[in-house]
Length: 420
Image 1 (cartoon, rainbow, N blue to C red):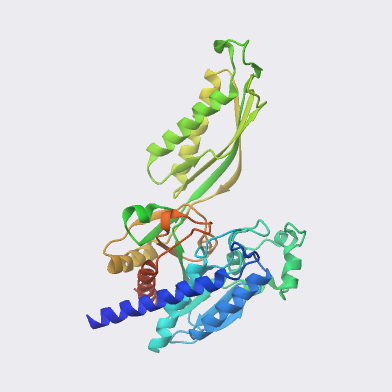
Image 2 (cartoon, rainbow, N blue to C red; image 1 turned 30 degrees about the horizontal axis):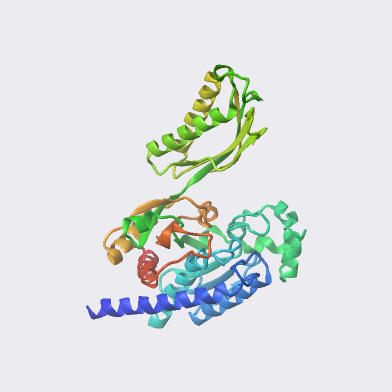
């Protein structure tokens, strides 16, 4: 019992430290009235130095890699052993919250800190990474930091420019990095055993279930399309109802079908029409053309493809019944990223121990784990966030939930590092 109490007290102290450090990082912003920290900005480099100092305090050897990720290594029982990699990102969207990304880095440091305080080494080394760019806020390139680590950084990215016309290559030079040395950030497959990422849920499922922690089964795949119904504009007063080719009425019928069909599918599939543009857009003219977006997501590719086929077939049928035309063009396609089954099991075991039961759920948002899964097994642990709010200053977690997360994270890391 006393050992359990001491572990609980240690987790609570660690959680309080995480919350205080999240506040410190939130002060490193390019805007005084809202958190914004983008790749290779002065604030990003300041965050790297600050996080690097915390890594060093926890007993890690610290370095900034060739693409600007901050990395710390806590050596294993045998020097040069493969590493269990823990981390998330330190960049933000504009006017962001203070936990998206940062919570995963700070809790990982606490896992290592606990081992150092115990004077304990594991069969695997532990490494913590604060990725420099996951959000893509500055250059419109997502997963830039993690793709540096996996060696899948396209050369064309160097020419990409930000809103001020500064290229990635120039930004790297301004930050003291050499664009010609990007390849040095890539890690050999045998150097890393697996990747674990702790992250706020960015959704309401854990809160609605009354649980602090959940285990991610997969990161949703996504399809995005530009769609269009083309009918015939006409006078709102003179064209009889039975003669109309109303593109907006067709689009509205389809939008209701999209909502109902996705809702009946199960399997955590979601579909959204988020943008509608109607032409000519006059109060006294029958709409002749409607352009609308379609975003569908799900944790498995086959059901996602089947849903898309069903939705597009119905759009064609609606257009046919109404004597209109329908066309759609897919402009974004990313496959689902399943989390490793063994890592899911280990995470579920740890979560069950600290909160009594575990919940498996998908991630509707993208994460660095997408890139990492191309080379290594990945697992993700979600932490409840208030109201499911994310990418917003109101983003919030509780110290109690963070303490539970640290306890589960510590358990799963030690179990996996010892072959569990």
